[in-house]
Image 1 (cartoon, rainbow, N blue to C red):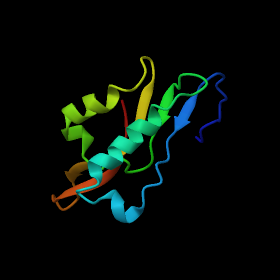
Image 2: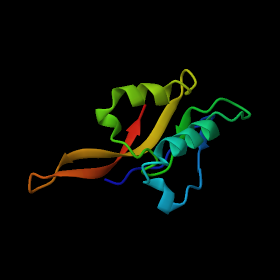
Image 3: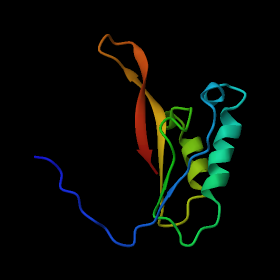
Image 4: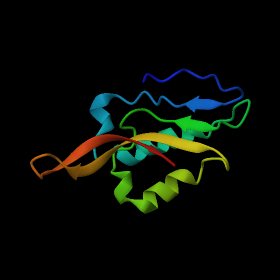
Length: 108
């Protein structure tokens, strides 16, 4: 059964687009500064507090499910009552039993 669209009033969403060139996105020497840019853009003042702050696909270049300290650090700037939605790799086993990175969506 297909989903039915539903309008929800008064939900504020902040979509963050850091415009990081693809060739810099996964460089080891750029990963932390890229995260810093996302955090700084997310903290900019707005008209109202967002319910959701949404980062791009694969915006966090670390497997957040395995890094609770990084998850905690990233949520410190999120206003109380708001959620941070990020794309990040998740490590898991593929059909052959080898460890592989999967594109994942994480809500904190």
